[in-house]
Length: 347
Image (cartoon, rainbow, N blue to C red):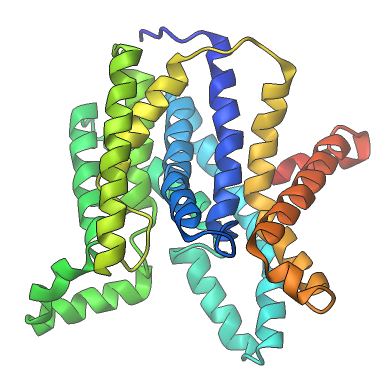
């Protein structure tokens, strides 16, 4: 297999992983809602690239290796999913107690989410990665070509766009009661198409493409195509938002080419080796996993004490970032100690 990537190229990927981890926090804790609507919209726009970038990275690094590593990788990701699901379970139970919800019903819903959707707000990504990797692995086992896998993943991505982003396209189906009831039943089970089949499959497949095929595109051309994709993504987001079509803002047509060309540029562009990049890689993982836990704890502590300041979006985002960075650095430092090596299991 040809590969024109030198080892230090991964430094750029590690840097962008860290940057996008801050954007993931911005998705869940928007920093500019109290400051500026245009800034909030622009952050929402840029943040769309974060999850596809992570998916492509996962596919790229996994499929660069021997296919024998696939099931070990799936086990590792699923173990992370279980561990962080358990870590976040007290938040789910505490929220249920505060809202005087039935604990048995809460646990039943949590288990259903654990299996089909994602046990907590952001942990869907881990479950989706497991599902998407297994789908791609199955396709490879069935000896499907990379081109066929990409076409299949694009079909599922387009199907997933309809109920999420272009819900008005379902209007004609509403007239056919039997089909519409079937779709409603499926929706009750999977809840959203933001999952491994309809989203992760495409981007994991793109990562595999980068790993298995030698792609030669001039950086200048890739940059132009990336900017063009981002322009059309912006137009798409504006139209969808103001037309009121979207149930959620996860899947977009032009997100796929924008993510493809961005990863190509990042993968190709090299940065000099520095120890900081390895640390940023670990930090990005810990920030992704822990930021909502930190936010939940801070919300309990600060809401009674500083309600107005805590409700100010930029302060909330900044404080969560600082606290999450502090927590992540502590975990990284402690995990190097003999008695705390078990902490490595959470990242």
